[in-house]
Image (tube, rainbow, N blue to C red; front, side, top):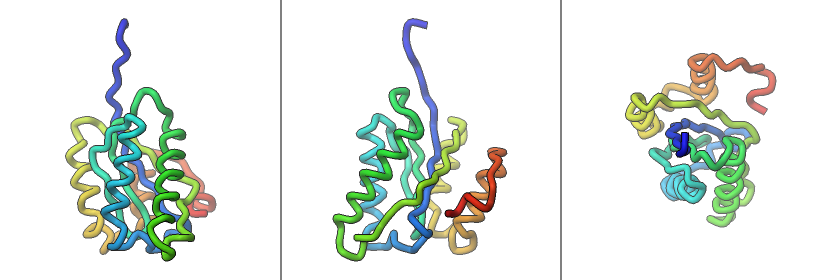
Length: 150
């Protein structure tokens, strides 16, 4: 093939260190916009960004020029620095080391967009840990419960 073509949607999720409720109303929308901007800057066009008090979700198109690991490293590094600059209440903000990245069928993009938009409602009844376990089960990802949260 003479041309390199790619259209890979990924659903990314990760939490802050110790899953503290640090993503508050004062910073939430600005953080989501910032995360989307980082993705865009890395040519991973954001489709939807959202989350809850202790974690975020990003649906984006994965650029063929960057690996998943490099994308996550840059998103976390840049956004962590930005958050810390938003006030002393965020000076000890850190992301956890791990993350989840899941492929999304193009026919299901709208479902994932709605899912991300409804995080506040969703997490009135579901903990982040249970949400992540459900993703891992759905995608048949093997994991060790002893190491997934710390």
